[in-house]
Length: 87
Image (cartoon, rainbow, N blue to C red; front, top):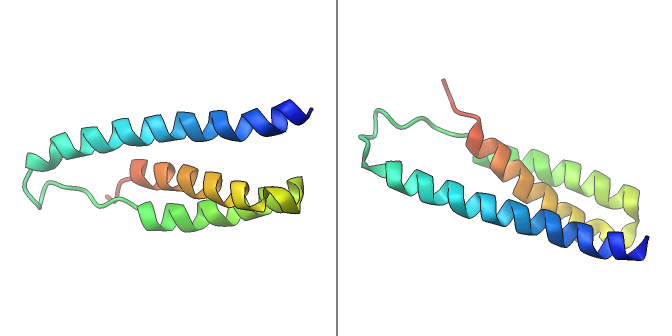
């Protein structure tokens, strides 16, 4: 059980960091579009909601996991916010 508590956050953060880097590269390649064609994303809102959920999960898993919960929640919320486009 201890090994899962050690490795699970590392695996989750590793996967989300790789996805975030790939997504940022794709967005940078698409920057040649004009300003009117670019859709706004909800990255800030996603980060805020992700931090709230991460705090809740961190507290539920124990006070020692609060920092990891906030970090993973913020990263996942940022990814979700980047994928939700404004209409």
